Image (cartoon, rainbow, N blue to C red; front, side, top):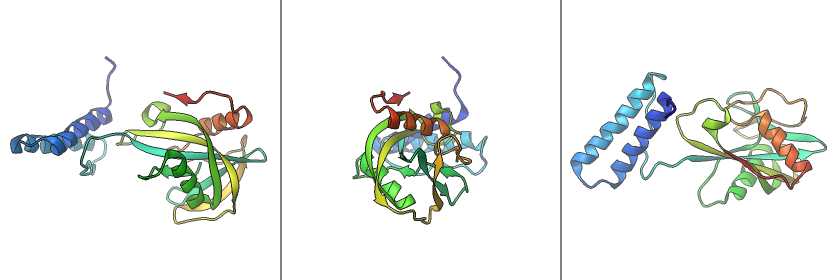
Length: 200
């Protein structure tokens, strides 16, 4: 068995504790599951002193992040995150009661001002195994190739700037949100739509 990181161990302890708190009816067991979640936070504090797993209920499942790749005249649409000052494909956490495609279309409109239509999925990846910086949560990232339908560039409280960039001259990307690999991959789908979706 390959060695596991502190994050992976803490994440699993927290998910077991969360499920136990939700589904256990024995008060003593529930107390033990609460303690298990506390231990999970203590494990993470070795890395980050102020860490605390958020109080959630139900069975712990991966979070879903959707990103939209939109091309125009050989350039890709990017937004500059207000929080980091770095660029990324428009997108964010998927909301409940919307399909993945509806989520990415909504995110693109809210963050860039452009109306888009999701055409196909270029990649579905586990964030941890796709080379992104560590995050406490288990996260699936879904990348869509989207068609530009209308609208105009518009910033929001999340975005400081909206622009199109040549594929081979990308600005500094936010390493937590999207990478040059996903942008290049989406471009290949734009040129050759018959490619197969990448997943890990």
